[in-house]
Amino acid sequence: MAPEYAIHGQLSEKVDTYSFGVVVLEIISGRKSREVNNDTDGEYLLERAWKLHEKDKHLELVDETLDTKDYTAEKVKNNVEIALMCTQSSAASRPSMSEVVVLLRSKGSLEHTPPTKPSYVDSDNKNKVCGDTSTSTGSSTSNATTYII
Image 1 (cartoon, helix red, strand yellow):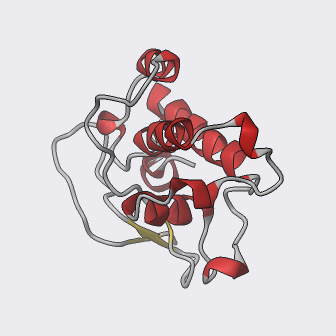
Image 2 (cartoon, helix red, strand yellow; image 1 turned 180 degrees about the vertical axis):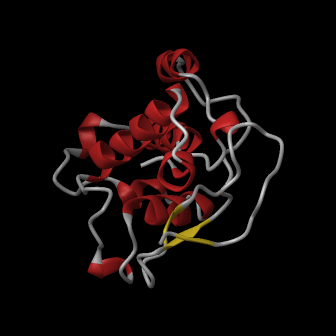
């Protein structure tokens, strides 16, 4: 669920963009977003995807049951980056779905602003949201940790 909706109750088309990014990561990984992976220190999917992106190890996210002939490292990287762009903490930083379609149709490596660390539920404290929790108005931003009560 998009942070601005979960925390502030704000609903916009960018909430759908966030959800699309999560679904893309679920398809690539074969994991559910809310499923804690005990093989990776209890990380949630979005947390795991971000950490692998930082290390440029996108292929480690791919579902092991997929045939390696069906994808390339470059396509996996592009799709993970698009998904992470869709899950940016600030709704204003996310692309529109029209922009996502253009990115998905592009061939070769993407020319775009790299994504920043998305918000996700902290795996050690399920009531804690990590990352930027700014509102979509853009009037103020906060990199503080927010607790859901």
